[in-house]
Amino acid sequence: MNAGLIKAVSARAAAAETRTDESRTTQVAAPLSDSDLKLSVERLGFSPPDLLIQLYRDIGNGGFGPGYGMAGLAGGAVDDQKDTAVDLYCSFVTPDPSDAAWQWPRRILPFCHWGCAMQTCLDCTDDEMRLLHWDPNVMEHGMDPNVAIYEMSDRLPDWLAAWAAGEDIWARMRMA
Figure 1 (cartoon, rainbow, N blue to C red):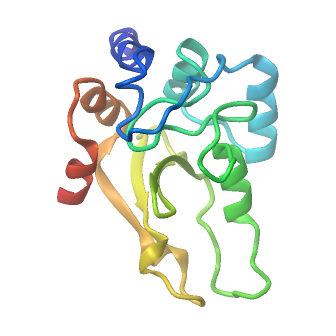
Figure 2: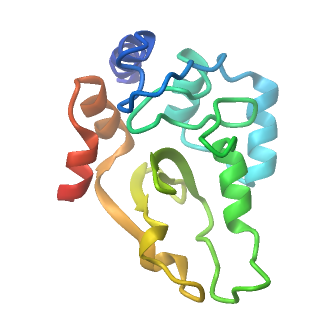
């Protein structure tokens, strides 16, 4: 089942002009190594879904995908703040001593940057591969981050298939 999806995503990621939806130059990171996967699982405290791991092993450890592209796991592509998805998650789950309300939900992995600090997140609490949208721009200090996390209608495989087919994922997210 995943072979066709991996092939379609790989084809889009291979061309610089279609690698991401935004016009900044990115490079696909080197494939995810066993040691970087092990480090990622250790730092996260859980394993991301097999599909994400397969994408990062077969295509590259991030640097392609919707928006500004998907951040990789340890050793992979970084976002505009130089963070991998693992770095972001570890930062988000760290309590903020100046904000008692801050408590990032466990096993919600931010991995795809849209600008203005917005992220698509992957729900790793079960096998459903549900996607969530994180928009911190609607928050104020002292608010629970869950007020800025919205469930998307897509699951990871459908979302990637739509992107690989050239669909405007940003428009799709706004309609959800």
